[in-house]
Amino acid sequence: MDSLNSYAAPAAGDHEAPFDVPTDLLIGNAWVEGSARGRIEIVNPSTGGVLTAIADGTVEDGIACVDAAEAAAAAWAATAPRARATILMACWEKMMANAEWLAQLISLENGKSLPDARGEVGYAAEFFRWYAEEAVRINGELSISPAGNNRILVQYQPIGISLLITPWNFPAAMATRKIAPALAAGCTVILKPAAETPLTALAVAQIMLEAGVPAGVVNVINTSDAPGVCRAMLHDPRVRKLSFTGSTEVGRILLRECADQVLSASMELGGNAPFLVLDDADLDAAIEGAMVAKMRNAGEACTAANRFYVQRGIYEAFTQKLVEKMGALKVGPGYESATECGAMINQEAIDKIEMLVEDAVAKGARVLLGGKTPHGDGFFYPPTVIADIHPDSEILTTEVFGPVAPITLFDDVEDAIRLANATEFGLAAYVFTGDLKKGLAISERIEAGMVALNRGLVSDAAAPFGGVKQSGLGREGSHHGLHEYTEAKYIAVSW
Ligand code: ADP
Image 1 (cartoon, rainbow, N blue to C red):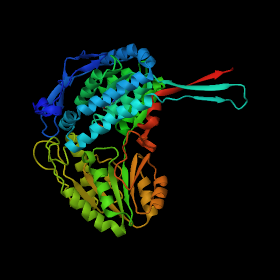
Image 2: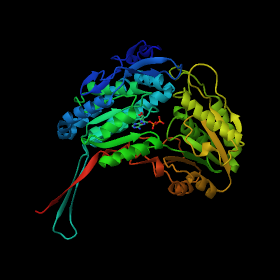
Image 3: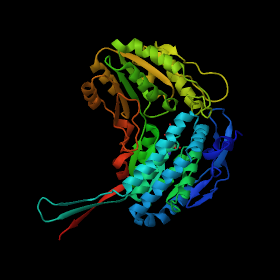
Image 4: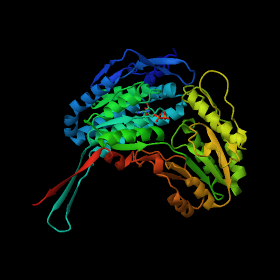
C-alpha cells in the first residue's frame, strides 16, 4: 500500500493531519462500517498502487443515512440563521487551518498537482464562508395584490432532505459547493462522493463535525453500487432534493429517477468549452488565460477549454507560444513539489484521451506537442497541442477531460460564434479580444451559462455557476445557489 499518512501528515506544523482520515460511513455522528462485508480499494493515480480501502455502503446504509438526516431535520431547520451561520463560519476557519494536509490528501487520491489542490482547498472552503454570510440573508417578500384585497407574503423555507452526488475531479469543492448552501438554507444532507476520491470528502465531514455541525445534519455514504443505493434514497419519500455534479449521461438517468417522486433536481453536467482568440487580443493575456482554462487540474474540469478557435492574424503566434508554455510544464505525481501537471484519474481516462487524439490525427490533425502516452506506473498523459482539426473529429464534440488543446483557425468572427455554439453543451466559454464592446456582444451570443471575457477562470463562490442546454439545470454558488435548497411558501393574508 502507498502510505496514506506519510502524505496526509508530513513532518511538522500545519501540515499534520489532526486525526486519522476516516474510511467509514458517516451516519448521524458515528463513523460506521455499514452492513457490507467488502471494502472499496482507493487507488493512487500517480502510482497505480492501493492507498487504503473504504466502507462500501449498501441500500440499507443509504436508508440509515436518510433516517439520520430525518432525525436531525426539524431541529436544524429551526436553528436560528445566525447559529447556522456561526457553524458554517467555523467550518471555513477549520478547513483553512487544515489547508495544507487537505491539499496533500487531494493530490494523493486525485493525482492533481499541489498548486491545483491548494487552489481547490481555498475555493472549497470559501463556500462555507460565503454561505455563512448568506444564511442570515434569506429574505422573503411582501406585496399587495393588484386587486388590493390580498397581502402576498412569501417566505423561503428549507426544501428538505437533500441527496448530494459529487464527482472525483474536485473532491472538496464539489462537496462544499452543495453542503454549504443546503445547510445555510436549513436542510440536512446525505453526501455520496465519487468512489475514486472519497477520502477528501470524509476528511471534510470530520472537520465539519469538529466545527460543531450537529449529528445527522451531514451524512456521508460511499458505495460501489451508486445506481442501486442512490435509487433507493431517491425513492424514499423523505428525500426532497437531488443535487448532482457529473456526466450528462448519468445526469439524464438521475433526472428520470427524480421524476418518480417529482424531486427538485439541480444538475451540473458536462461541458465542451470553446476558447475564442480574436486578432486584437492581448497575446500574453490569451496565453495566460489558455494555460489556466486548459491546464488547471490537468484539464480534468467541466469548465476546461475543450476547443480553441483562433483568428488568422494571431494564429501562428498564439499556437507557437501555447506549445512552448505547455511543453515546459513538469509532469509527475501531484504531491511532488515540482509537479505542474499531475496524473489523470485512471486508465479509462487515458484510454479516452488517446482515442480522441488518435481519431483527430487519423482525420488529418497535426501533433505539435505531446500526443504519446508515457510508459511506466501511474496514469499520465503529456500536455498535448494538435492543430488543423477536421470538423468531423470527435474531440470537437466530446469532453476531453485531459491536457489536450485542439486548435482550429478562423477568419470570420461570425464563423467562430457559430462553431462555438455547435454543441449540445453550454457550460463555460472563453473570449479574448482587446475590444471590450465586441467582447461583451460576443459573450451575449455564446450559448453558455458562463463566459470568461479576457480571463481563464470563471469559478467563484460568489457567482452563479451552471450551464445551459445539456450542461445542466440550476446554479451553484452565489445567492442563486442557496435558493436551489429552498421552496417559496406563499401565505395569502387579509389584514
Ligand atoms: P464522471 O464521468 O466524472 O466519473 P459520473 O457521472 O460517472 O462522472 O459520476 C459522477 C457521480 O455520480 C459519482 O459520484 C458516481 O458514483 C455517481 N453515479 C454514477 N452513476 C450513477 C447512477 N446511476 N446513480 C447515481 N449515482 C451515479
